[in-house]
Amino acid sequence: MAARAPEGPGDAASAALDELSRNFTYGALGAGNGSLSGAWYRRNQIHLFGVLLAILGNLVISVSLNIQKYSHLHLVHQEHQRPFFRSVLWWGGILLMAVGETGNFAAYGFAPITLIAPLGCMSVTGSAIISVVFLKENLRASDLLGMTLAFAGTYLLVNFAPNITQSVSARTVQYYFVGWQFLIYVILEILAFCILLYVYKRKGMKHIVILLTLVALLASLTVISGKAVSGMITFSVMDKMQLTYPIFYIMFIVMIASCVFQVKFLNQATKLYNTTTVVPVNHIFFTTSAIIAGIIFYQEFLGAAFLTVFIYLFGCFLSFLGVFLVTRNREKKHLPQSYIDFGNIPGKQMLDKIQPDSDGLSYGTLPNGSDSTKSQSGEKKEV
Image (cartoon, rainbow, N blue to C red; front, side, top):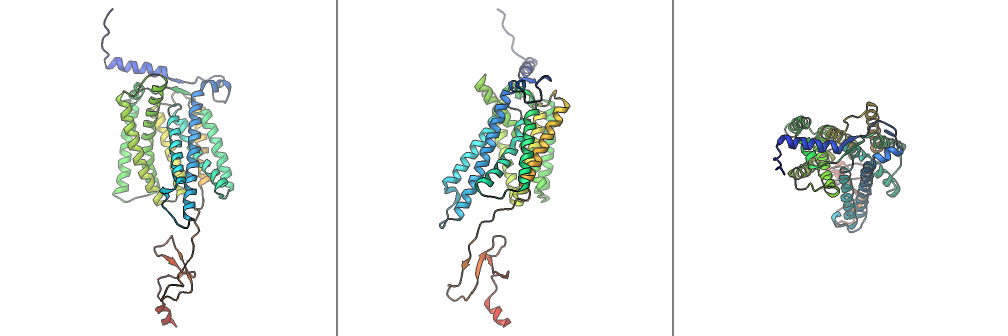
């Protein structure tokens, strides 16, 4: 029996291509393609499992956000207030948030990025429904229209997303990682990120587009590395161990680092701008960057028909428009603030009550709008 020669770089590349060709197939145009038929279901069962995980994960995130909101409202109305992190209800919301994000992370191991990323609209619409039902917020006509458009867009996304079956192994990720498409994409992204960071830090320009573009650039790396990590874990469970390859830990570090800095810039945006503005813009930017990352790194639209791509993009547009309508002009819910009576303070003769002013720098204002810091000596001089 002849000894086997050691593999060279060319043999390793050919092996990666062979594995890639086995694990990467596109649904052929034929009966049932592009429609919710029996053949479509049989061909996309694993994708539907990923879609189910993503939808459930986003709905759980919606529940967790509303639980946290309710816990804050409940703590404010208590006579003896305590920090929110001591509330069992708040920690329950945090736990549900972790469960929802875990579901989203696992979904990337079963379905393409271009299918999972746009489903984030379900979190916004689900949160609006829960707020109306349980927190008794007003249901507007724009909310109903936005939810309808978001559901219609989700239907088109699920139906016309790329019909690829791709098992993400370590060799597949390595092959994509050194591809010229991804190298050019990373170089352009690093240049854009450095320019925007210079404008933000040195020039002091803190426009919402600049901040959320920084978030989107980091998010593209997060979804690329997140799908790689999730896919290799799924491949290890279902087929062959992949966690011994260095590329797994490289992608894991990239995922954690990009996620941390992404949250940092997103917090800056929420501090400077209204949440009703940040949520739809961030959803559009994040989804767009994730789709581009999936197309360039994982080549998820390779061989897709023009009509399929057009209807898919139209579904994305409907989901974007639905999120915008749901979050548009949604007023903040102001907490009721009690009036503080200073009439019983010795040495003070104040007949009115002072209301705390949360929008100004002073503690409070008198009912007639005058500043509470005016002294009584000034009133005597006017008399």
